[in-house]
Length: 99
Image (cartoon, rainbow, N blue to C red; front, side, top):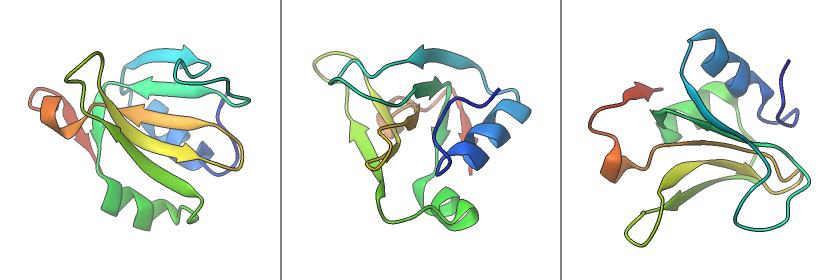
């Protein structure tokens, strides 16, 4: 069962089919959110995934560097408040590149 909004579902489905480990599924811990946030254990290559999945402009790529607490990088749908996040590039040495 896919959990993200329609704008991110094709990416979510492919990540699940590739058996990329899911680290967290739930609401955003950054702020109250209507949509589901999924965290996969991989590095999400912004340019290639944006092209391949034809993500609309309102789906942004967000990065948090983790120097204070936590780290993440991925796609956030501002219309639906869903997100698919992965590992930030500074911490991606030992994880799979998903492109």
